[in-house]
Image (cartoon, rainbow, N blue to C red):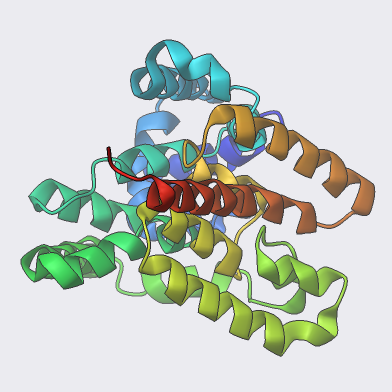
Length: 285
């Protein structure tokens, strides 16, 4: 991809530095608060900044997985992330710090700066806070409102500017998602059954483990692209997900649809449901 995603974000940061509206940058769809954070990258030349960001992403993998980081380098969403320079690994890493505490509420608020990633990474935590610690849920709501509302003080129209450039949800965008909605590419007449199935999977998943909830959210999401299956990084062993992701990518090229990428969340579900069955059948000695 040659840093395609990163180039868009770098130019958005450049626009902020120049005092311009970042929504003048073609394909920049993030909320305004995130544009201000991109200034950190925009102060460097684009290629220097891009390779610095690639190095940071590799460092994140090393920090999380230690000597096993190389196990995930061939996971297709990771390969795409490194080549395109997108920020999905950053969101995934931040989610690891989300919990029943102030830091978790703060990191959860930051996750909302990419709504399609938040849809995959946050719901289980929101449900967990609702059940076990509503004070954290309130903190998250307050921090999220402050994060999104503060720029209104000097740019009161930013939300409308953002909404005006965000692509509309259509049959085409639905079918490019990596979940059940990708079925609409081949069977557009199934829109209502697919939507109902997606809702059922999402609601069921959120009441399970975090890994199952995340796989359910990927299957249920009507937005996003194939590489957002990076949210499932480490939700099952690398020996399972890496080959499945490569097979999914090959089948996607062969079929010209993103339907094969449903194999990744399905593999996560299969792994955890099998583990649950095995655990239940173990007789204590």
